Length: 484
Ligand code: GLU
Image (cartoon, rainbow, N blue to C red):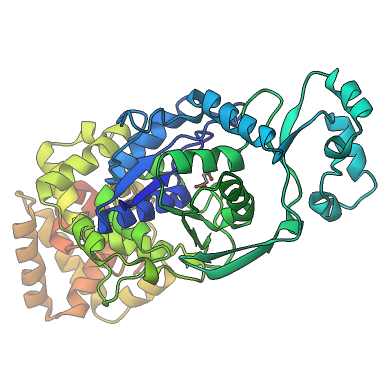
C-alpha cells in the first residue's frame, strides 16, 4: 500500500510556523516512505477565508522547499478536486447515505432552541452538554410539524456506550468514550459540511494512509473514527504532534509580537528557506546524532517518526538565529550582497554609497548575520546611531597611557590620504610602535574610541567604512572625555 499523507490548511490565513511544521513533517514522512504528499484546501469556513489564502499557502510551502505531489495546481484526476468547496456534491451524497442507513438524522432545531438547552449552565457545562436528540426522538406528528420549517442540519448519531481507541504515532494509545461526544452536525443548513465530516470523506476518497496533524485535533479523532466505522471504511493511522511553546513554556501564538509567526515575514526579512526548513524540522523532532545542521536531503534520510517528541517543542529564538547564521555563512560574498541589496535599497542606504562600499559593508558583517535585513540594523548601529561611550568602555580608556596612544593614533590618521583598511592597519601598528602599547592596550582603546564598543568586526575595515571625517570626529569626542 502506498503511503499517502496530506497537509490540509484552511485558507483563513497565511502559512505560519505551526502549520508549516505540520506540512513539513507530512512531507518528510512521505519522502521517507516514497509516498505522496497532498495539499488539500479545507475552505468550508467561508466567512473566515481570506482572498489570497490558497495562493499564499502554496507559494510559501514552495518557498520553504516543501514540494507537494498533488494539490489544486497539481491535479491527479483520480483524486481531484482538492478544494472542499468544489466537493459539496460528494459530501451530500455520503451524508444522504448515512441518513438512509439511519446513522444520521435531520435536525430542525433553531439556534435559539439549541441555546435554550444550554440556558443557565456554566460555560464549561454548556460546552459539554450533548444535544437532547429532540429531533431524533420526535413523534411522527411532531416530525411533520418540524419538517415544515424547511431548513435543517444533518446530525450524526453517535453510537452509545462505546470507546474509541487508537494508537497514535506520537502519543501512543489514546482512548475516548462516545459519551464524551454527543450527536454532532455533519452538514450545516447551507449544505456545507463541517470539518469533522468532510475531512473523513476526503481522507477516505484520497486514499490517505496516515493523518499527521497538530495536537489540537486529537479530540476530533473519536468523531472522525465514528464516521469511518459508520461507512465501514478502514481507519488511517493518526499522529498528533505536540504544541509549539515559547521559552517560558506558554503556547506560541501567531499574534505574539515577540515572535515572527508567518513564513512570508521570514521571506521578506531575508531569511534563507533552507535554514528555516532545518529549524522547523527540529520543532518536535530530533535526529539521532548530535549534528543539528542538516540539509534537506540529510533530514529526509534521517527522519524517523519514532523520534517525534512527546513533550512540547520549544521555539528557541537563539537557535533560530544560530541555525540561520550557519547557513548565511555558507553563502559567497556575491550571494550575500544580493540577499542584502533589497533591504539596503529599501532603507535608502545603497543610494548614498558606491558598489564597493556596499560590498565592503556586507563583507564586514557577513559572518555574524542571520538574515538579510539585519544589515540595515547593523549599519545603523555602526554608522548612524549617536556616538556614546558607555561607562565600562570609558573606564577602559581612562587607564594610564591610553590618552597618549589615542592622540598618536589620531595624528597619524589625520595625515593619511589613502584611507583604506591596509593603510589603517599599518597606522595602528605604527601607533603601537611609537607608544609601546601592545595587544589589548592598543586595539581595544582604538576600537572604543571609534565605535564605542569593546567588540566588533575587523577594526581597520570598520574604520575605512566609517570614513576619515567621522573617525576623526569620534576620536575627538573620545579624547575630550579623557581630559582630567
Ligand atoms: N483544516 C484543518 C486545520 O487547518 C486540518 C486538520 C486536519 O489535518 O485534519 O487545522
